[in-house]
Image (cartoon, rainbow, N blue to C red; front, side, top):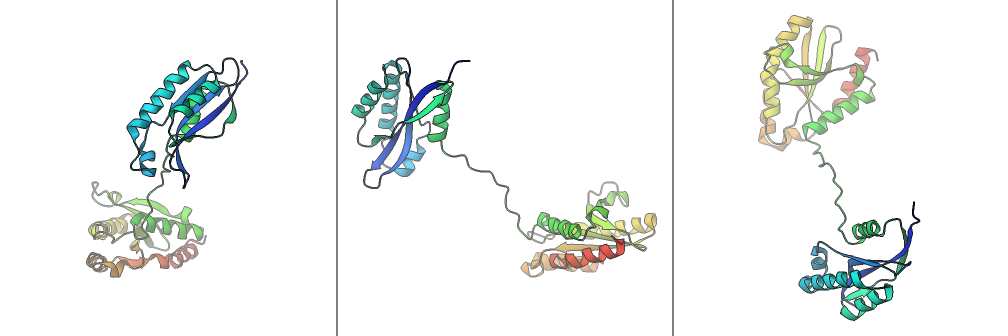
Amino acid sequence: MPSPAQCEFVLLRYVPDAIKNEFINIGVVLIENSGNGQARARFARDWRRVQCLDPDADIAMLQALAAEIQRHAETAAGRGSLLEHIQESCSNLIQIAEPKACLAPSPALELEKLAQAYLEPARAISRPPRLSPHSRRAVARAMQDAFSAAGVWGLLTKDIAVSDYSHSADPLKIDCGYQPNGIFRMFHAVSFDRDASQPKALVFSFPQLRAGMERIHHAAPELTAIAAEGDSESAESARFGIGILQQAGITLAHVAQLPELAERARVELRA
């Protein structure tokens, strides 16, 4: 395996205002210290960063200059020849940074790595969208956290399919529940953020679910809808949703009440 080549590289910087000394790296030149000092050059593929720094930048001139330097790099014999050509060809807008040494097992690949590191814009970090505290997912997560803290989450039945007790086409699944002493307590996260569609789904399915559970489990079903605090005052749709839940015999509780509900579950399940 050949030894890594001893090289050095310089960055070419676009400096539109020498007083402010603000700059953007626009090119990198890699020169091998051994042999005839072969030189390689790469330039930015995307010039928008230059335009952000200097809206009046002459991009066509910079592109032409980059092409000329790359052609000269292919024929230049040695470091001094190329750097002298750059200094002669470039205006005061282009500065050559201090050389830095590096070891390159493959100078061509090393140049690509340097170009990626110094010339390409940083990739944006992808972050998951922030959950609204009033969203159903946020409420469901709070519910799981509360029951987990009480040590009973693993004892609960999850995703209780309404279709097991009612019409087979009903897609609703109740988040969780447990059966102590002839009662089947169930809990389901809801949100009134946009409309009342989530409480309406519960109201539609609960009568058939209740009848089916009474028939199969010989237990009295009790359903509690869990919502974030403030939903009850937020909009007309929330007030409507709360009203139909009450009419259907579905209890409404807020996230702040979850520790109390979880503690009751712990006692009833003797966890």
